[in-house]
Amino acid sequence: MADMADLIEPLIPALRRYARSLMRDPAAADDLVQDTLERSVSRWHQRRPDGDARTWMFTILHNLAVNRMRQTTRRGRHLPIEDAEESAMARPSTQEDGLRQIDIMAAVHSLPDDQRSVLLLISVEDLTYAEAARVLDVPIGTVMSRLARARARLTRIMEEESAPAAQRPHLRSVQ
Figure 1 (cartoon, rainbow, N blue to C red):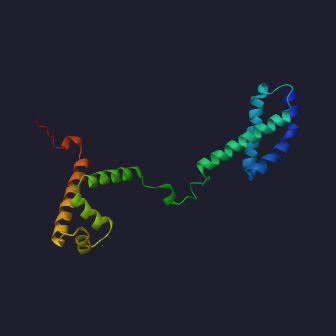
Figure 2 (cartoon, rainbow, N blue to C red):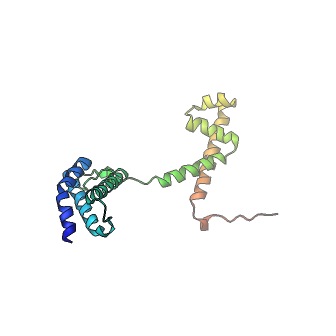
Figure 3 (tube, rainbow, N blue to C red):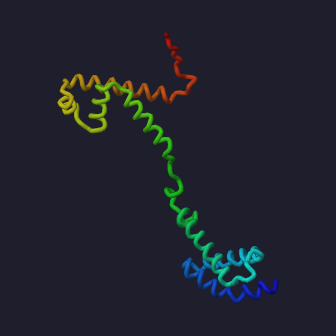
């Protein structure tokens, strides 16, 4: 045990210098040196007896530093909770929005072609009724009728999908 302390103790100032140059933060560097010392003491039996203790300890420190830098990159910068803005901590989930968008697009694709065309031209492309009538070469009344039917059908499809399975009407097939 005295042999280990005699080999490790003179290396501490050099380890601190190297850790500070890697971490650029004195507190983080001190933590890194502490972890290096803890790891080297707990794994002293794994060191090669003919190997250089200095090289071994610098390798441990370097590997720990690289792991910390990778961890910081993955996790992001540490921000005390007192300094965080409320908007940074609470964000609505986006999973349901994505699923809803998929459901809406599936419902739109299930519409008949004439209704889907009118709905997309007016709702997505922001054309007026008159412009949509010219594009489709139909009267404005037909555009308004198809749009009303498309919206009603889309609403009905979306309501059916959002209703629990127990409330959906059971349709049986006749062969």
